[in-house]
Image (tube, rainbow over all chains, first blue to last red; front, side, top):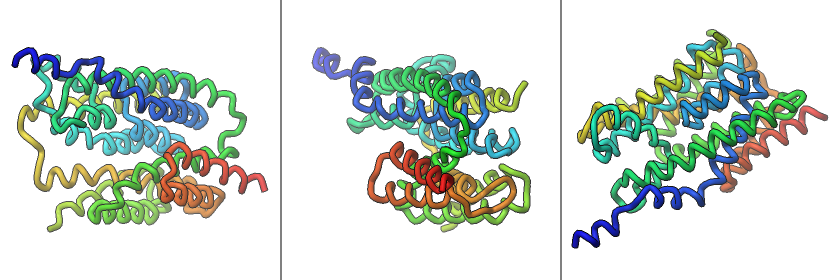
Length: 222
Length: 101
């Protein structure tokens, strides 16, 4: 019986293999992030370092988008932090799979990204090694393709003529689309968009986004 | 230090802490009730705000420019089930086309 249990225990390698079919996603988004970040003046090295340290797509795009639009550093940081707040909830769902002391848990928990988390729970219970194996694949592809993207972004002559600003909007729209199926998320999203539009002419750039995040408080009703 | 570097360092640090929050602070307990609902709504709120700002804001002005048809085309593609990256390319192409004419 012990042998059977050992045979069924997944390995890091299983996580790597599970992640490979999803490889196009981090590659294409990494390239897109590199291109857009470089084209909007964020700089190649900060872009690559951000992919290596933040390792969370939507937040990175948000920070670059806010700074690129002329928003303040604080607004860019808050927009990214609010988007990553979901990781507090996501990491809570897998809190019990990380063994060892605080340092080890701090390090291993960095393997939590949306995709690795989803793959690690595919069998109905979360597998730490699948999570880590998948994260290694996504991390390497994400950082490398960001670097390649910044090179491509650097040779674009006039990025705004190419409609890259609209590509940012399309990305955020695609990311919000799955949330719109549930009533609560839909209300929060519509309210946040409305707050942003109303406040844009009234307060400094970037601040409307921060104020709009308060739309999540519609969750307190009921 | 440039603005970009400050953003990179702070967002990186905050993200590390958020990812570690569950395993380090919560142990085997779960986040639930209203706190959970509010945290879950942060992402759609923030993303929708970003769509609005990135489509209609130009500095502190609201404008209807070439981005609108681009984003509308992308919205249609997303609704039809197109992959995200395809929607991004469509938005960029349509916007660039409108700007060119």
